Length: 216
Image (cartoon, rainbow, N blue to C red):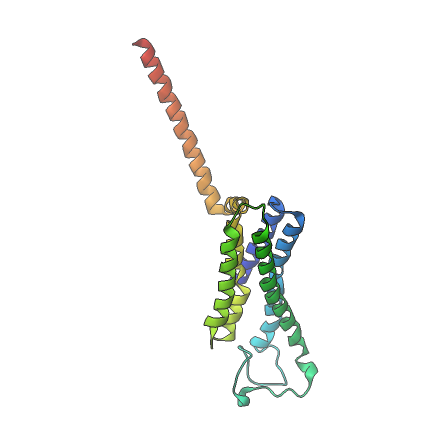
């Protein structure tokens, strides 16, 4: 849950940076915020599924706690006699898949639009497009037979990577994000303070040097 909270803070901060900086047209900014904020669909889906994973809620009074929700063994499958008993699980599925397809289609559309825009001078969107595509396909290929929990964590925690890449791809977003980090802000303030002190020392030395030259 700590990682989910960190991800939520990063998503909200990313949306705030996009809204505050306004580097693009208002429609593009709304599209960016909409894509990032949809992560909460995946988070809500995870919250709704957790009671079934920990055994607080059960399907058909089954004594087995199901974590991965997938098995090829017929003996391990739950026999569902009434469709409405598993209906609450359809909402998390709908939310998570809506988020997945929104990210696939949304990121692709934004990247293509940026690439085809003739009056733009930045070419970093090409790298972002390739990176996001390779990242998504690598998850599908490399997961293989790994557990559902591993796949779901990669799916839900992907804003840690996507938001970071998006922020550092736009200079003003990057500057605003770095300014927000507590440790970086402290180091920057110390650097400015030391620089000011050094400047005062240089000015004093320059003054006495000029005074010395005047007496020669």
